[in-house]
Image (cartoon, rainbow, N blue to C red; front, side, top):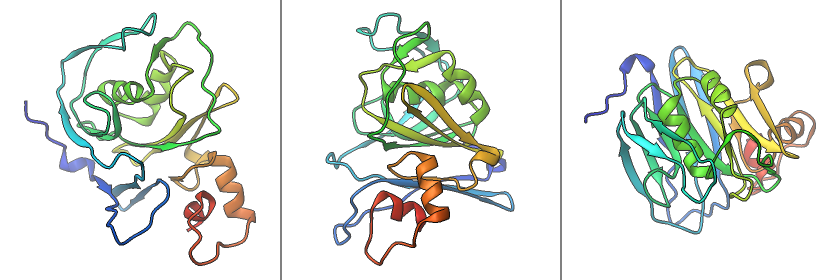
Length: 221
């Protein structure tokens, strides 16, 4: 199957390239939209250097990890292109043919909800589920009401964007989903602190000094 990303989407998927001469200590993402041009850029710093780029086909029936009781099954509606460090179906970055794109960042403050009636997924399978089934950030929020990340998963939060120029951050704090989009997302960027903390520091904090690569500094800059 050949995946084509419509030129009318005007959405580019860009990764910051980390070269050996540079020192980067964490991950950051941002989304820019102006005059119909859209770019999602992100860096990823992790102790696993290698990764794979996978083409994920549409119309493929999939199942959540078997050891999660009640894991869902679904058939992919959209094809996607993903960057995976842990193997196929477990992406850290990705974009589907409908123009939905996402980036994942570590957030130590994350507390996922306890088990409930929603079907559970591993954190990185949750992101593939969203690429398989959603075309817009609104659809991501709707899908999150059907599936959840299993509580014992790696702690992360996410920046999504779509071909309509809309963006969304999703994180889980104190066991509850916190989403920012539209008017509640005045700056479409994310690093390694809760979005509201990053925004408040940007509005009220001092500008970072040269060489500061902390989470707050990266968002500020």
